[in-house]
Image (cartoon, one colour):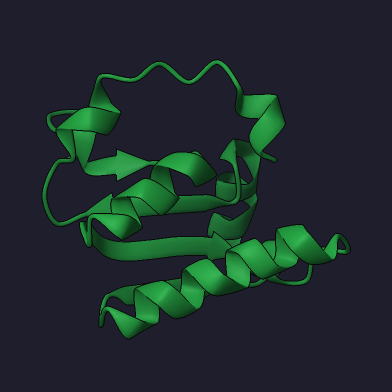
Amino acid sequence: MFQHEPNQAFYRIKHVEKTNEAMAIDTLLISDELLWHQDVPTRSRYVWLVESVCDNTEIVRIFSNLHVFREQLGQLTGVAAILQFPVPDLSDQEDDSYSDEN
C-alpha cells in the first residue's frame, strides 16, 4: 500500500502531530518506550498524542519491547501514523530536522 501511496504514512513526530490536528490518522503505531521516556516533556508529548488520537476514535497500537514490530518501528522513529486520507501540505515538506525531533 505505502509503495503506491507514500502520502498515507508518516514517521516523524512533527508530521504525526500535524496529521492528528487534521484528524487524518486512521491508525497510530507507537513504541511503549516513548510512553516511558525518562525526559518528562518528551513523554508527555507522546502521551498527549496517544490520548488525542484515542479521543478522535482512531486506532492506537502500542508495541511492547517483546514485539518484533517494535524493533522495526524503533529503527525508524518509534512512532508512525497511517492516514485515512493524504495531507497534501505535509507530503510536500522536506524534513531535515530529524535529529531535533527525537
